[in-house]
Length: 265
Image 1 (cartoon, rainbow, N blue to C red):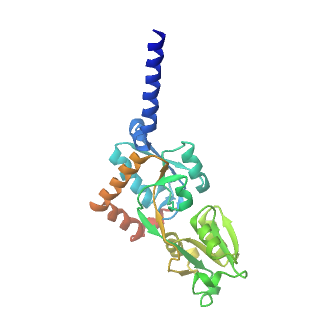
Image 2: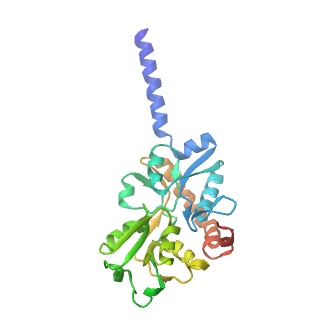
């Protein structure tokens, strides 16, 4: 009797463990009725805060369509960029949706979906450098002060390509741009979409943009290691919206139209 009871208990434990291992972020979200996504709403036009305090943007719209396809609500968990990976590993949210570039270093800690867009790093220059600096290589000099955003691939690219320059890190890209505008830095390194839109703002209009990206950076959704079922679902979702016109509609809304700029805080 005791042996049969222990065997039954062991089988129940094994079944529970198998179910727990097999359950992924998407399964958990469907069961819960809510998809929790970690994001840092400072990356224009992917995720940002509007004047009503709502988090909006191209990637947020993609996540909204994704959650609708699952039949669940979308819950955005706003955290600093440097806390995204620790937060995912600590199960504070199901996935990362925050303009995150797929890098080899990050891929050691996370699984990534297929890329939903490819960007690259560009340079915003102080107007005094127009004609003096024509490429990122020109900035690799101790004379120049380079602003970056902490924890981003812009910071990593600056360290890689501009090791001789004086680098400063800021919590948000807005702070980095402001330092260039105020003449406290000579250049700001960040993703091309953000720099293009930053340049369109009146307060930054005097800056000069080196438009040619000097890195290749695919952006993707991040999930915990081993969550292959969720990756399969998300990759099929991305393929579906690319084929049915949804992706193009959302892309045009945020990258071709500029009406939304008036609503951003």
